[in-house]
Image 1 (cartoon, one colour):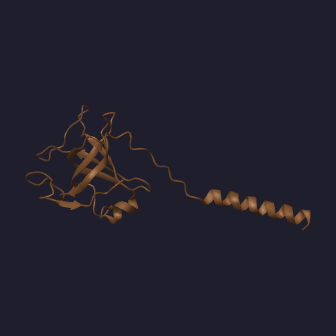
Image 2 (cartoon, rainbow, N blue to C red):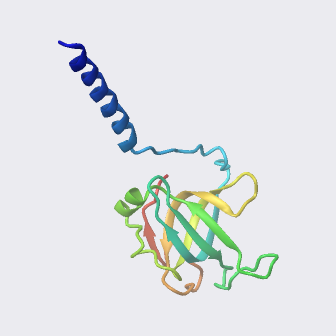
Length: 152
């Protein structure tokens, strides 16, 4: 084998290695240490948005009181919460999609809250969907549709 062919072979192998590195999908995954998994909170709200994601999806909702009225934050605006779910593909297999979870839907979620007190958490139980208005007695498994827990 000549020097030229050997050099060309090494160059081709190196280029192949570099191109493989550019095409490999990298997925970072964070720790759940930020969530207090010794505490769960169950709350209801009116869905603002479902944000599908490749590693984690989120739901954002305006917190509702037991009568279905928006809870106001210190700024006088509706108090928003964000809850982390599993990947878009995983939650879709469990029935949670942008078609089943549309803005304005009343939801009840059980979550592990963030340790720092932020209005965020990670899903800790099933998601209950109750239509566009708060049912009498609240949005519960008895008054709504229980979706399988969209696990992280």
